[in-house]
Length: 109
Image 1: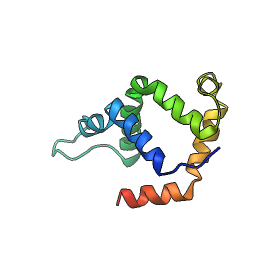
Image 2 (image 1 turned 60 degrees about the vertical axis):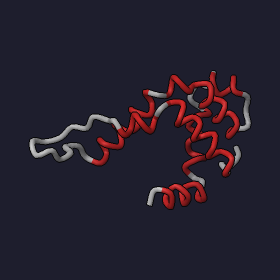
Image 3 (image 1 turned 90 degrees about the vertical axis):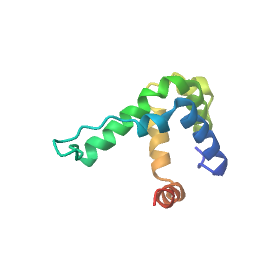
Image 4 (image 1 turned 135 degrees about the vertical axis):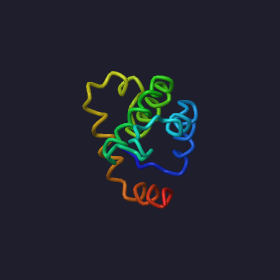
């Protein structure tokens, strides 16, 4: 598997734009209490964000499979037909990229 690089950011941004993830996250309906304060925990909020992102996934299925196949150095068909063996490996690989994690931490500060 290969490490992500600057070129990949543009691929990711195209996927995010096509799936309309930004607008979905900005327009999320969040539960609030009587005073208008958010009434969800950080974990619940994170889960809600993940579900919003996944809701847009079918619109970018082809692009996501191509991107993941490129990272894993396999053909797109291989990742499409994978029985959940390769995908967890890719996720673990991405989670262990210290430069990516450092970049994301800086970007979200």
